[in-house]
Image (cartoon, rainbow, N blue to C red; front, side):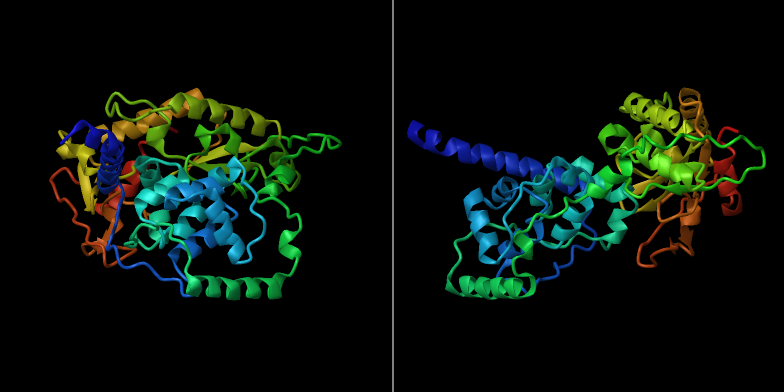
Length: 405
């Protein structure tokens, strides 16, 4: 092969290597489940037009063009051909707060590689969201449909005809309304976050017998809000409104391994300083309104099989590639106790915790009924019965007693 061939083909070879690397990472990290065929959309001439329609108001033209291998101008022409309103470049907040909508709209359209580009995430971040973001993987059907890549092709005559029909339907239903200025998505957060300076802060008097009245934020990002203070679930204006209604507590979902370092499991605790600093600020802000922050714990969380290399003795029940941390072992119980102690000492104003010890999450042997998952009989879960195992009737109390008083 001559030098000219290398010069012409090296960019293609580099791109192929990068794609292979991404695909390998995706296969190792992201779940597929049964990988059934995607649900087809019958309303559009092809998957490309479905993709543009579903993402028009959530993603930039440049991002959509990058995914399907074309120009922003071509994407704009596709949208206009179906009668979509003028495209407005979405603010970054759409991606930060609306990512679940983006995932859902494209779950049956894009393969993982293109979905990651659409989100501008790596495979590890998506894997965490699917597993820890309020059971998103379960809500998506416990499977990733098999989707071929979407590639831009010039529309033919039949495609243009169908687009004209869609454009006529849009026009007949909406007329000129779509071209008028609209209220931005998530604008209600701006409204609820604003403090009414004309109202005086009144902190309720303390009472030992006062009933806790707590709730969850209307617009909290469930997965990991403490890492990004811009996604604050409890801004001052919202706290002011809640206090006026007699609310004296709010709760926040957390994953314990993200909040504290550990000598037992040294891989835990990345960025815990940032999360706890933001939690401290939130606690101090809420205190001004007589409101306490409570943590919702669903622990211990299952970990991938690789985590248990050299730690086989703490491996609990099994679901696919994840294993529970056995709460009968001293190491796991000590980790729970030490981590929670660290959190409450670092953020002393916390109101407390509440925990669910038998949920959709794989946690203990209580997750099973007769060898099958209590929530999905199609999932085989194999309990590990060892002499050290605690009887199921005592597992909840075993976990709860590790939490600091």
